[in-house]
Length: 396
Picture (cartoon, one colour):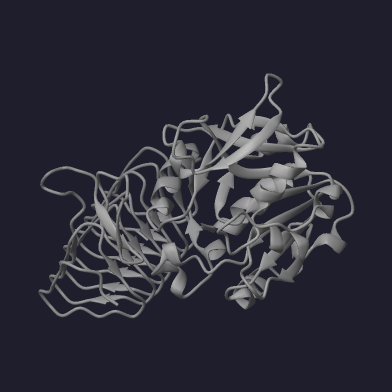
């Protein structure tokens, strides 16, 4: 069995996190999105994953090489971003038989993927309350695909396509076509023609679909996946530290006296935590991090080589690799009105769908002491703030 992972996009909606790395290398639970995908494919006995790469492809190739836990990895470059179906056509000569297709920024569980493999052709869907945001699968009484309606303005159904396809090789023999008004060749357009001649089984997922279209989706995904955390302590915990709930601690990490941890929480290798910190549910701390005295961290993602100075509060926040939070840095994560937090994406104010969301900080951000950051604000790579600065707008 072969699988194709579409991972060439620039992912501008996830700026500023993807300014310094491709989206498949962003981490959830201290593991890259691509590692999550490949691990699920291994559970499906996939022998070869063909990665369609483009944006910052060298970083992906350097990290993964030609083999992942015994699975062969093959790379194909999509030099022009001409759509998902165009990307698939680039691997036409490499496909031997029936194959899987996954989007490189959506997480699916292997149990759902295995269900798809029971059929010659299949696609996974999820019932949605907002069909106007998705491609909606139209099925007959036997659950076979009849059509796909992209972002329908009127209600036609509620089965949203989530990726996770299985196709016979002949799918790639269909002509590349564009919908009227489209500039790219999209997979659903070809699939619409394919299902007129071939039975494509539509399957509703039973586990999860975790898209990462926006930066805060990393937190959404982390909240789901961390609930299955199994306790694993490989570091040192001093007397006087209190641990409640599941905790995973990497080698070389020291948790000092007075630290209070409410799991599930993950802490990587070679970290120093405390003394007297409060690490709350959902927090994931990367490798080589230092969390200072009397710091509180709640439901946040702290990436590798980051320091959080004493007396800081980090809530529902993402902090990029190599960053330094000056003492007393505060991330506000709740609006006074208690409405959903809004955030700017490509000059448009987006409802994040989250009532609580702090800051989104890219790699190598440095905050001055007593910096305060409004909810949903973003700090671009390498940004510096002055002592006492109040961040009301995104900083680039």
